[in-house]
Amino acid sequence: MLATVRCEEIAREKYKAAKKELHQLEEDMRRSPTEYLNRLSLQIDTCLSESLFASKAIKARDCILKVPYRVIKSLISEEVVNVAKLAILLLIEEKLDQDSQWNPYICRLPWQEELT
Image 1: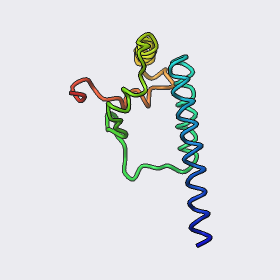
Image 2: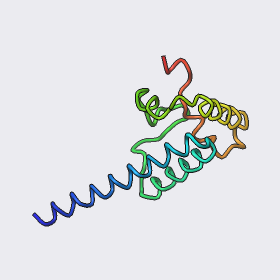
Image 3: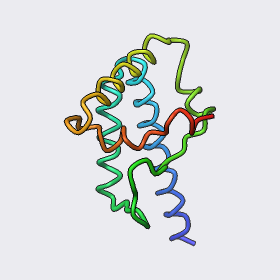
């Protein structure tokens, strides 16, 4: 019983910390796409440092994460300007191709045909 209670406490603590981190990411996305991308990169690094591994080989253009549109929509406020900034930054990084530190992530983004 004690172990179960402690596991529930740990789960609640992790959930609370994750929720706080998500809130911070949302604020960063609204404020500055660059800051958002930096924090997202840090989050990815953190996840990878916690031994997150693929169960099979991942090829270029493989879908490794699907985010429902309703989730994306909830993160995008009426501030279209920030979304436009993010789109421009993504285009710039995509143009840099292999010279971009974001290339491994950008090359895994879906093609427009895959979104319809």
